[in-house]
Image 1 (cartoon, rainbow, N blue to C red):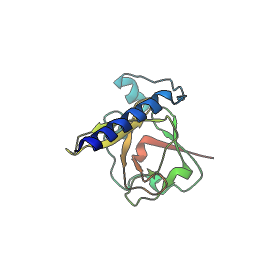
Image 2 (cartoon, one colour):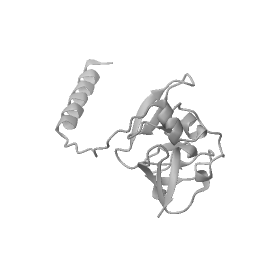
Image 3 (cartoon, helix red, strand yellow):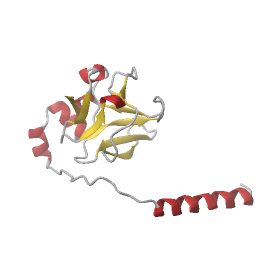
Image 4 (tube, one colour):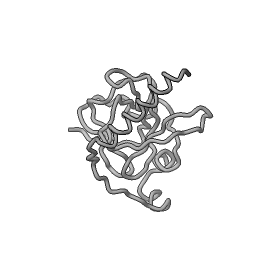
Length: 158
């Protein structure tokens, strides 16, 4: 890297840092739900527990929510926090409910190395329940595909 490119990159990083520090942040306050494993087991079905608490994956095509077309809200099966609306859903053809975006401040992410290559895993911001993985092969406007386990969601029609 040439010195001019390095200085330009460094200047850009400082500008981003200043903008982030100056930007007003008004995140939604979500009270966390923390339960012991035996409490989760009482609250969830065995399939829900395996996905939400043990970061499992349901079989593709097994969830009726993949074919859900009604207007409504998709909420976390662990704590009922609204995560997605029906307007955010699309048919990805993968066999799992897919969304191109989510309700702001409702998801938290981390890097998952279970398949050796890193993937971005996302969880419910309230209870920490594993929902699925996000990929960069979704539709416009975001280009994202939030590939969700149907068993980790409940659908509330509007």
